[in-house]
Length: 255
Length: 224
Ligand SMILES: Nc1ncnc2c1ncn2[C@@H]1O[C@H](COP(=O)(O)OP(=O)(O)O)[C@@H](O)[C@H]1O
Ligand SMILES: [Mg+2]
Image (cartoon, rainbow over all chains, first blue to last red; front, side, top):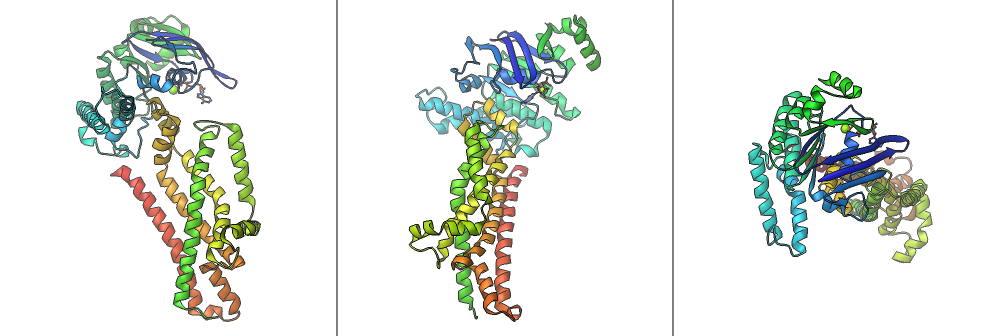
């Protein structure tokens, strides 16, 4: 699904990514762990073209998306991203937050004559509202559809941010420390939701500090340090038998 | 000098006219310029150093010229447009617009800069174009701040309408000054003098309160 080849990113003299190689298969759940500052967020941002890499390639579904000729907005339609800080639009209701992007994209297709999503903008909006309500129902927040984000708890906001991503029916979802900004009592509800999504055939790359969670959902764990993938393997290999001394050192601090 | 209520009423209309019209013009040009300044800045969504530098330079120069000098510099332009450069209330509109345009641009730029970067990244990750980032995130998310900026601008332009005196364009503040200069000595004991001052204060307060109210109301939509 996605192949990262020798990816490098520098901010001036600061070499944040120093040649990352990573390959993720369709439907695979990959957890990325590593000390803060090791370049985990930067890697995710590069995968979603939110920053341009300095060097290297990212092959997504056969196309090098670092190429300027690739329409990154089309790429992003199938790549979802969940941020540490939720980033819901505060002037829009929960429902509006969720349907904003899919309605826009589907209307764009409608204008090109593709009627897969509805025969009119109104129909597209209705369909998306229906789907959004289904998703909200699933996470038990359908009563918040018309609320504004700031009236919700952090856990609720993050779950809605996740639903907003799901509403795009992405093939790949990138999670950047989805629970790090939450109060401890809200971490579980968010992890539970991610666990549920993991049961489906969506490819997931999750940067997290929740080691128990990583061990449970990951098919593969990546340990990043100083801008490279230092070690990777199954959760058992990484958590029970780490080979590199840096991995051991990191795990001894967080476990 | 004597003034009547009907004269004061006329001055109020003149003052409101010059303030609101020049402010409107300043926003017609200043809003897009402020957006351009924000998006072309180093941290903006489409950094463009040369454009940002040129715009900044123009605005900084404009902002550093005192209003009275702008009034003088634009005399001929105003005459070309209106047929006369003095004596009528609308003669001050162009100078006020030119003076406040730079101010407005900077205000808009700053309001937009307050928008959290994460929100921009979020909508980018959902596939938004640059134009959509501006229309769906930058402007809506900074609405409350833009409105309070508008109130600040109006009050500051209102202050600048005092220069209308210099070209005989009238209005309340010029009226107050005229009143003083024609009644040297006992103007403080004239009720009309105080009425005019109170009206100015009321207008300023009105604009500020209204700005605050709307801005709060927009913010409150989130705490519904
Ligand atoms: N836009 C930026 N400009 C300059 N430095 C940055 C920028 N983004 C990240 N960095 C730096 O890159 C390093 C890695 O950051 P990040 O990818 O966020 O690490 P992690 O997510 O693993 O904690 C940090 O030292 C950070 O300060
Ligand atoms: Mg990070």
